[in-house]
Image 1: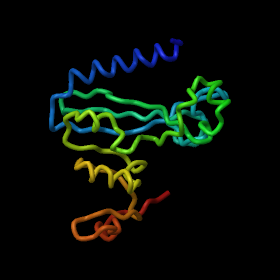
Image 2: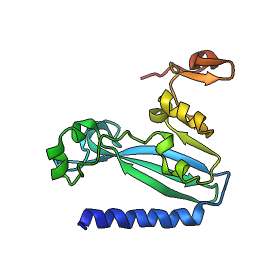
Image 3: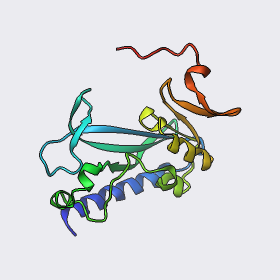
Image 4: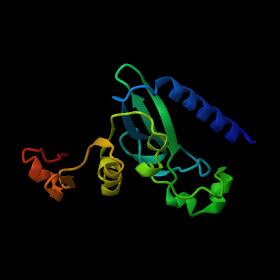
Length: 182
């Protein structure tokens, strides 16, 4: 087992340990978010031009995190490294960065049916995420199909499912919604 595998197994062991101490609250919230980590070089897995933490587009890796918040306690329960197709389509580059041939392109976060927290039936009330996830109709649809309450940011130009309409424009529901400036 290489250094990467040992490090990854250790991190996963820590996450599993945290999970066993906090999964007791049916009112908890799952918080999904990603962040960019400035990265350099051609062998840092997943590095490419992304909008990063510095508020501009730069070479970085995207880490995606899922936190569990009970209102009294919060902890990280899952994480993954986003692998863009520009990387996974170049198997030689992947091998040089230590990415196994079995790893394909990963979405920033898997569809809800693939999310371990949902698959493992961890107790929580709802999921929240920013517009990067809320803008995905497929993501929202799968949460609805899994009967998971969710609050997602989106844009005023998006459409949402409401009780009496399948694709209702957000700006019609909230006519006073400010237009983005700047």
